[in-house]
Image 1 (cartoon, rainbow, N blue to C red):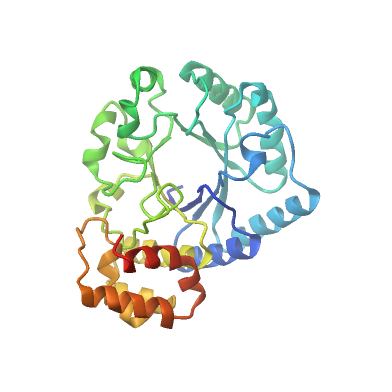
Image 2 (tube, rainbow, N blue to C red):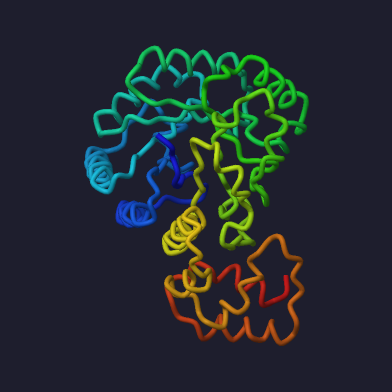
Length: 326
């Protein structure tokens, strides 16, 4: 199955199940079929694999999976056995999510501050595959983009070993040249030339704001090279944790993939963006070096005090910074 959709995989907060259900329904309307549940702030997926969420939460998650199935959207779960002492708890957690209707999993070894070892990670990965032959399982390495390769010798050695010993028939995630890449194209996979490009799964952080909260990237997916998508089995965009913005991003990604010619302004308007702000939407394009005129700064100032909408409440920190010329 080709997986096209989203990741709930950001830092700084979690969506609620009402938000998740709304996203699933909009994914379906956009012919997108995959939702990876992997929020960094869910302790039961990372630091506390040995503990389980409450029965009420499990019931809500099960309802979420059932709803998604009715809309033909597959729910995957990203688990991060980053603490060695919890590695043995991984099977129990997979069994729990399987009981809630999940059969797609990702093992995430990203953003590890402590000592990391690719052979140990692969041992966990292979052991998990052997224990569960009826699940789909993929892998996110500790070095998941080009900029991390040269972070230090440990990262360089890890990446060299990854290219050497990671199974060539397994799927793994890559974010491009950077953690938050401004361009996703074939060039950003050159360092992975020993791998089949169909097995390189894209985790696209372009829209994600948790790592750079003073900036919001917003275009009609101008950063994605269409040719790259042809041979991709998995392409997921990471959300922001801002519910109104995330619904907009689903429509944006869906419109881009369908190549239907939907006007970007119409998508923005549908989601409540004020008309004067639509005229200034270039300020959210990271590919443009924007220097606002005094007239544009004044317009932005007026927008922040005249536009009343839930979306404005999510964007206020960005708009406030921009109107001050920062």
